[in-house]
Image (cartoon, one colour):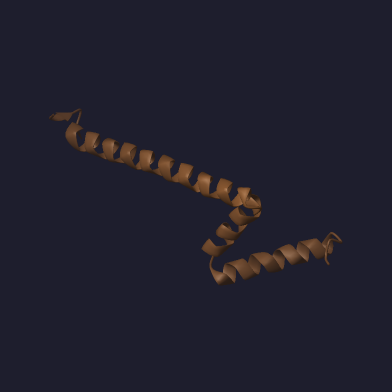
Length: 82
């Protein structure tokens, strides 16, 4: 297919098809992850807490420590400190 309105139609189609394949793969991975959380929940683990742990493990150590320090400060200010 030739250019249409200054757009390389074949190149555009190629990008769109690649994005669609990646979206399908992402949906499959999301379903797989959901199944792992369900399996863990079935064995007595708290999926919500596990999601928080995964999120924290992705963070840089300094960022995580800073976030935890601010959380502790806020909790203390609200009388929630242990």
